[in-house]
Image (cartoon, rainbow over all chains, first blue to last red; front, side, top):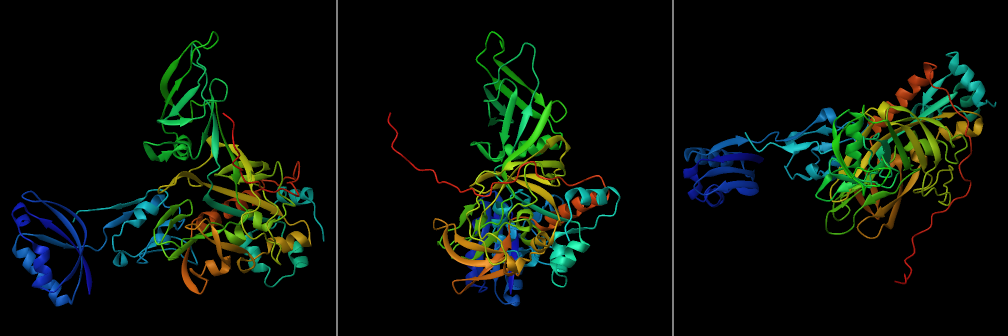
Length: 136
Length: 383
């Protein structure tokens, strides 16, 4: 299964190489989508993980045991639907198919489960209605 | 059967006119003949809502005391035309401040419609009759004497479908085009689009009363790059970008639900403009025209990564399935203009006509029967 996780690191957890351990000890295939971490200060890290569910759960438990807050990322791309004109420009560039527009009503639909937070929609929306919430 | 615009207007005034949207009449055309349609339907409403870069607004600020001849003008930091007398300007949709490329003329126009305050700063050299040399103040919709939307080229009759055959993302006015032809974008309301329902402009000409940005507007001229030389297909529809319209309307009466500032990444600002045009069903020929369907409207697919090279041909029924085939490859197809908004505009205009408040016009002058587009040649200039 694939899961997107937002990790919040306390200052003391920034001295350890968790990414390496998640790969080596828990056999997780990780893809770091965004990182805002400073050693000794803490920060946040957005990560996509592909692995059997059991491995992911064990990896999450391991990180939590070191004080890292882990939240599953279900819907972290937002758009202001009240100002949307339903042009379809964002759907055109959406590689995962999370954003779509089609018959019969030709209104934009957003399936957050499919979103890989590639952020192309932020650039593609002519009205600049998309934003990413980099918080839990 | 033949009808005149005057006869149709009489029916509109008495509340007896039958008005249908172009989509409704396209469906009707599957079962009824043109002769039956001209008997049944009086007016067909067409509409589009898409990015139209050649748009802008004339503004008149009024005079200060003592007055200034504004020669350099900025609105919210965006440089606009200083070449119109003392206190007039033209805000082009694509005017921008290079320091802040995602806010430009189209956003100023949207802000004016919404009644927002805008910082006006202007400089003049100072003359005997206009002694002031600088002014910095606040303007808004209510302080302006006139605010007139005037768009030199809108409402393109058909448009190319854009794709990208290179290995890099291309950011264009046709949206974000993914590498290796992973997507393509199209920008036409298809069978609902105004100039595809009157492809030779038999009823649309100078003075045609239209829906423009939520208000009543008018066609003022053939649009720039008006092109009658594109080949027609067997259904009489030009393939590719052909005719265009110049339109005018009172900006102060418009509604940002139907006209919006926009920004295309790495391209710049543009304006989404909503236009609705009523077409009188005068005879069987017009009945046949307004019955046009998406599968009968063809257009070219071109590679924006490779000098707009022609890579295929498709039609709007295929595009609306969400996927087209080009050179043996399936490509995701998505719109760039809003069919949802175009449908709303066609319905609003239908409502205006049915209520009797909006009557049709005959062209004061027809559109050019022949008009070609010249390229700009680069010739040696002597210093």
